[in-house]
Image (cartoon, rainbow, N blue to C red; front, top):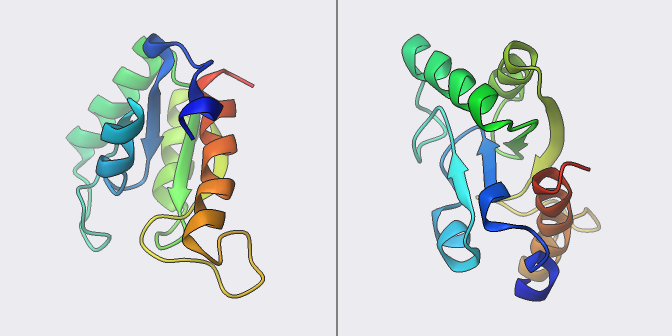
Length: 124
């Protein structure tokens, strides 16, 4: 994973997700994950929190947002439409996909997530 992400400049290592589920991954690979909701998928973001995140996305030029397989895409779609970003796809964090899916094992979860994250950080 480090080899895959080595081409991403440190100033571009920012990702928006629907909730804060990637703390360990971010720490391990030097990526800052920003989310309008904390660790719980049951929590509701505040309007002020969403507005603050949208302003940050605009000011930092973050153009891609992701949702996790365990959350509704509605919040991410709102962030995308209000900030001018696009939805980058589905990341797997708290649960794997069904057998035969894109992330049906721990290793395949990385194989699914990392290329999407890299493309988003590089602006592809």
